[in-house]
Amino acid sequence: MIEINIPGRDTLRIEHLVLDYNGTIAVDGALIEGIQERLQRLLPHVSIHVLTADTYGTVEAQCGPLGLRVEKFPREGAAKCKKAVVEKLDNVCAIGNGYNDIPMFDVAELAIAVLEEEGMCASLLLHADVLVKSIADGLDLLLKPDRLRATLRS
Image (tube, rainbow, N blue to C red; front, side, top):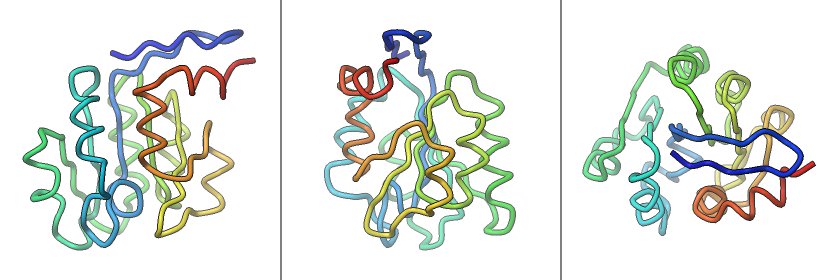
């Protein structure tokens, strides 16, 4: 578990990291450079779930060997599927970039919107706690919690 004391707010406890795949940790079906190492550093502290419709059919090859929990679902109804996964877990940090990430953001304890090469759905920003310019920056918020403390303190 990652515990982050946010001045003026409740302590944030993260047990599960739920990640959208394409557009968030992967571009064109391949993990973004530098992400594998960050995920491996986070694994001793949180369980990591990768949610995807697997458009490119690459998620198992890219994420399976890392020990990440991969959950695939049909392209139709992706938003409901993602929300259902997060609702079953406690103390979730959700990271995504798309319209279908909005429902999971609304039920997560911490929601981080990512603006990578595929862009970010503008509507998602209204449901996010933090916006980052890259997935590396988003994962670094958990690896270097003073950054998150500074952003979210009251």
